[in-house]
Image (cartoon, rainbow, N blue to C red):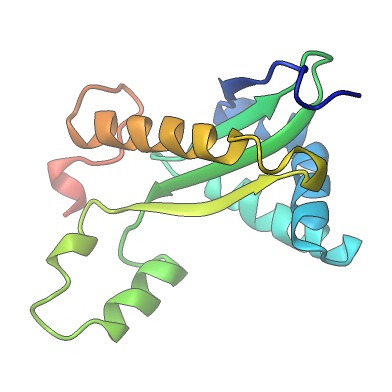
Length: 149
């Protein structure tokens, strides 16, 4: 396969489709991070939990043959979520305002043989665009509402 010649499409993976593509995404996670296979099973449990968040946003990089070669996802960081609370405790009092409505990039991985071709950057830009639309209130599956503050 000629990685350079194979067109890649960045697609949205809605929460309703996460479970169907989870094994493929976790294979990418394991390969990209050089983790043992069991790590993918464990991480997959977290991905499914995260996909239930109202602000969950996921992108996949799909090759011409329909296979996934990369994925990334995130959500709005809110009080009560493990990473949000960990970061908040580490920030000096009075300096954590930026954490409100922050988009938390949870995962971004590309298969090793596809790395170095801008695929990760394309997924990251797509996720950032989606997060900006949410923050601006121009997306139905919104990252923020005044009541979440």
